[in-house]
Amino acid sequence: MTKEIIETVWNYDNSYARLPNIFFKRTNPTSVRSPKVAIFNEPLATSLGLNIEALRSENGTAVFAGNKIPEGASPLAQAYAGHQFGHFTMLGDGRAVLLGEQVTPNGERFDIQLKGPGRTPYSRGGDGRAALGPMLREYIISEAMHGLGIPTTRSLAVVSTGEPVIRETDLPGAILTRVAASHLRVGTFQYAARWGSEEELRELADYAIKRHYPEIEDDENRYLSFLQEVIKRQAMLIAKWQLVGFIHGVMNTDNMTISGETIDYGPCAFMDTYDPATVFSSIDREGRYAYGNQPNIGVWNLARLAESLLPLLHEDQEQAVTLAQDKLSDFAGLFESNWLEGMRAKLGLFNEDEKDKPLIRDLLEMMQKHRADYTNTFRALTFDKPEETILQGTTEFTQWHKRWEERLGRQDESVDASKKLMRNSNPAVIPRNHRVEEALEAANNGDYSVMERLIEVLSNPYANSPEQIDYTTLPAPSPRPYRTFCGT
Image (cartoon, rainbow, N blue to C red; front, side, top):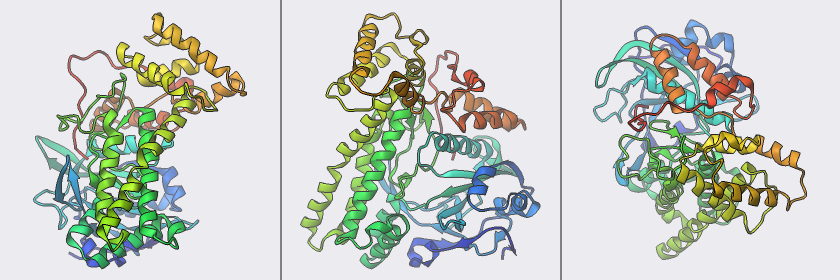
């Protein structure tokens, strides 16, 4: 069925659609019965150069639902592959349709993708639909990540479809409009390397460089530089995850972006009690994607990117492998540098000291031993309220606190400057799992006010405002661990 084309406020270009046909299949969203906007991100729409009033109209809702195609859009489903829990498979957008790329007034380019708009050529027997709860969950977590200053895809809107989605039970259906720097993934390059020609792989790499790393286009070996830049961005991104206790939950290679943004918020969650072995995902039974293992998985995924790029790195494969291994060996140092810089900031430290690593390590080991809350421990240190952490009263914490104060004294910056640095580095609030579940339960019952308040609080997590106090409390004890599911 041909979709009606309507004039909108969009300024679409479709550069991905100009790649070889191997990388996508043209497809339209499937219309839904009675779409209704559940939540709409006005600040994001404004930053994209979109007209708020137009998007709040009936036509705007129709676009978010996939019932109408904006003028200039060129809907398609992207092809990619990926290692899922270590096993390689052919994938693709099984329930997502890329409408096109919005070019903002200042020339920035963002993918506009519908998630849950029906079957595509890559659906592999699935219905291509999504449930309301998981789509709202992605909205909440992705906006929280944005508030924390972590590179992320974002959510422009969620619409309910008026149609059920059949899973274990009937669930209300929904479609999320996702905004991304691009949806190029490590898995996109794996797909090209496995099923494309070397020339098609080269075209994809040139496209990624032009879109995300134009400063390296004239480098002598731009493909090696490309690998190096992706490694840098991922080292920085994963360090930021670790610093706030974020656990992605499904770090498959198809969920690692070339742009360095966090993508796909399925079984993700934020850690309460500090423990490197923390896993929330119901399907991660072996702890492959545990909090403490995320840096290792990051470099493993990057090695898969490097393998895909080998034909472009050097005509001699042995030399290409050597070049790739050399760049991959930089990841550990880059990650540690980013992580240490962030941990120093969380402790109010401006300069570097050889005793910083053991100081940080000993604090984390204490937190793990005493099952201290990760976020609230740093918050207690920030506001000189050690009595608010379970560590208070232990001999080891008293000794550690003295070492920390002595370390603060070994820098030129004032105590006030250190405290300001800590306030800007330690969030007062994170999307606590029980708060997210509370918001989703209310929304599923038609009350969006709980979610709207949560999103407002999470939009400025470093504010330490009175309104945020209630959101710092921990969940009630539970006999069963919290579990998340791949619903998105």
